[in-house]
Image 1 (tube, rainbow, N blue to C red):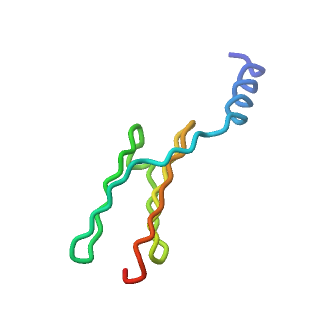
Image 2: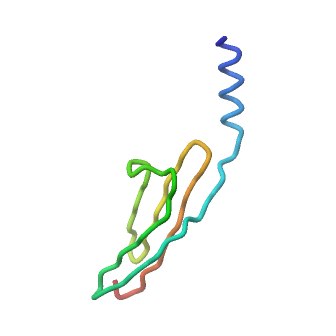
Length: 78
């Protein structure tokens, strides 16, 4: 592979927008505990980022072509 071909392929990759996907998630609450079950096909555990900010939980995962993202407000009493 020539350097020119490598540069061309890199430019094609950089200019293609990612598809944003909002995964299916079930949220269960029991005695003040929450369980989230997310359907994230093709996403490894290492690619998944889970953050909690106040009463909001955000799930985010990225691959080269997809970005999965979903957030949930759990309420003021959490």
